[in-house]
Image (cartoon, rainbow, N blue to C red; front, side, top):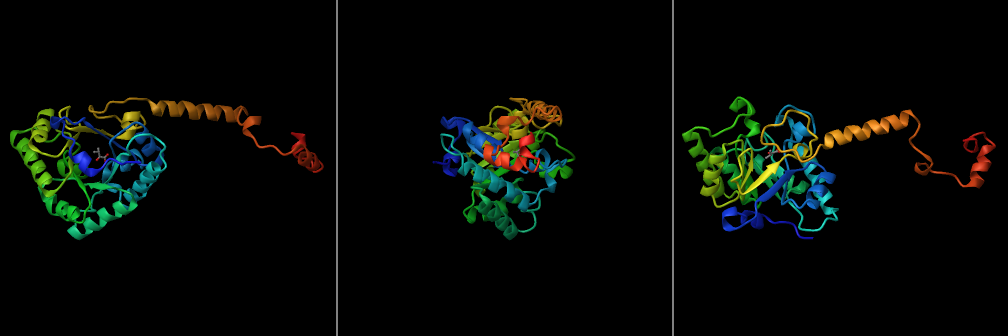
Length: 292
Ligand code: KIV
């Protein structure tokens, strides 16, 4: 089955008549298969893993090993998917400190995610990441940029704050996006910026922008799986739209299971294995199955 390719994604500018790109995060095989069945274009194995799956307060705790572990699960899930339509492209998120120390380390860590199943990697930051972007692209690994509110910089930014609100900061974001595209990024995530700034950036670059908290004028949108489905129960930022309340459905189902166990309504006869009458009778001599 066909997978959406990096060149196909790179060509999807809305102004050139492309449909907006749909990206969602996933961290395991069932999530990947659901995303494929839903027809999304890209799966991001995001370092949001740290918060929505592993229970940390920010993304800084996850390692390359963690990301590779979950990237492999996503890719295997897609390999087994029976859904129709092209498979989404799998983008592995390079975690904090996997591309900050040396360019060689960055290339090696990007390769680890590719070996685990990623078809591209994402990293955060603008101009200061250009040498790393160039080196990874040089190693034939496609790179997605990520600017604006970059969660790996939470301490440097002083919290999860909207970026680019002032004139100079807005122009700086536009220039960073242009520099990332020139360095070889095939798409750029714009997170937590005013919609006017996202429009400015989107108009300025030849590669698609994918927004999260960046208004409707990007070339695509990304949301976190647990937010879309209503599994994450922390207070959601205003850009999150919940399309289901899977968390509540899960609690209801688990409570029904618990009640059935406690009242001995689970399992019933059909949910149990049975011996043949002959074996059952022979064991009855020892005082067990036939007595039930
Ligand atoms: O890790 C993540 O989920 C992300 C998206 C929010 C873009 O980086």
